[in-house]
Length: 309
Image (cartoon, rainbow, N blue to C red; front, top):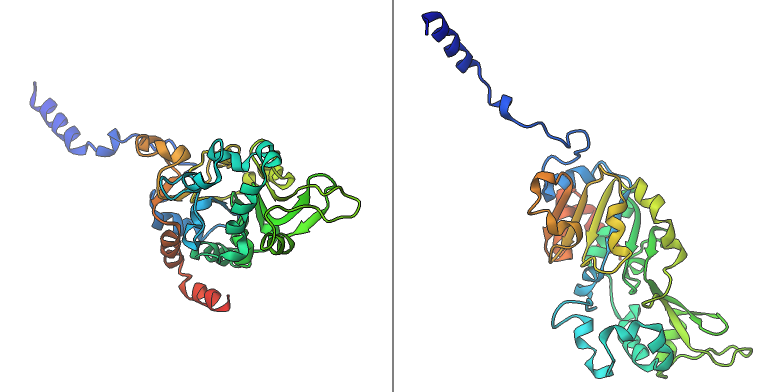
């Protein structure tokens, strides 16, 4: 090799850049987050005006309401006293029609007026007041979102709620206050309308096998406009609610706040090279919300909200 060739080779080596070996980011055009962590997600949230929350039972456990599936403490693990064929029977229409007493006994314990909203509910109220929220889709039947002061037009009760009830025969509507007052004295709710034969009055909670509320069926419009999705306190095991995170646009960042990984987040740790928008905070919902309040610089606003309520 000549001296000329050696000098050219030396120059070429000196001019080599590690950038020549870096693979271009395939998600560059749709990536909205600087990093896949809570601070970066909070920074992005500050730019949003169409946040959608998806609420599960885990946001209400600190209020004293059990979730459904936690081993030992979950609702399904503590229904032995009702002698049910299986835990889910208490929310099955066929079983309710045959034996309504177990459901009404449980309803006395779960009635919303027995509980108060949590930090998480007030955090969502705070962001609603900040004009950052499009909708709150909730699986919960406890009405705590409404009790926190969030207007009903912002809430989609995917599984219904105790807010109203209807006679299964004549469809007469009854209020939550009426149902609560009656259950303090009686074990089963019956219609009081003169023209009715005394049909069962069932709270407007969606039982297994029943159709979801009409308001839920507009989810495609809401989720197509969503610029930030926050899933909280749910195992994402009950369809079709569990499929909703798949309905947002391809560039919409998603945050899961839960004690365990759920849904598509279960794969994010093993497929980090394909993850450009999934962030997870494995934590209690209230603790995670306090972190977000601080990251969003909304601590003073949150204190004012709590004092007001």
